[in-house]
Length: 114
Ligand SMILES: [Zn+2]
Ligand SMILES: [Zn+2]
Image 1 (cartoon, protein in one colour):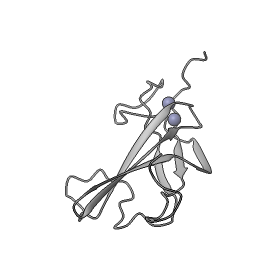
Image 2: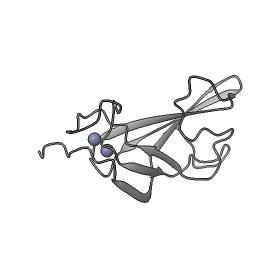
Image 3: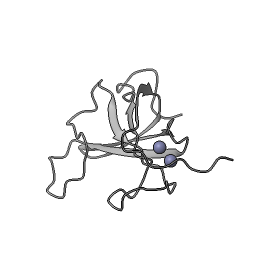
């Protein structure tokens, strides 16, 4: 076991990651949840995006889209490990910016559920 790495807001992992997508539908809205391992800190993490709703005032959505689309998804690491020197404004993660491969298109044979 190695101790958790320090929080690093400059860490970037530009290579596309393949995470496991879970899609939940609720009427016209869909939430897409990507789960996988952050390659920078090696912790498991989950990030959720919601589609179909108009933007809401409370905000907090990073890169909201109308549709999932084919582009990569960018998120900062959302792991639950307490990384040293993490600022109070960041409740989760190691600070690394990750690029996640988009979910399979609806109807594709790849399938979103295992
Ligand atoms: Zn971590
Ligand atoms: Zn991380």
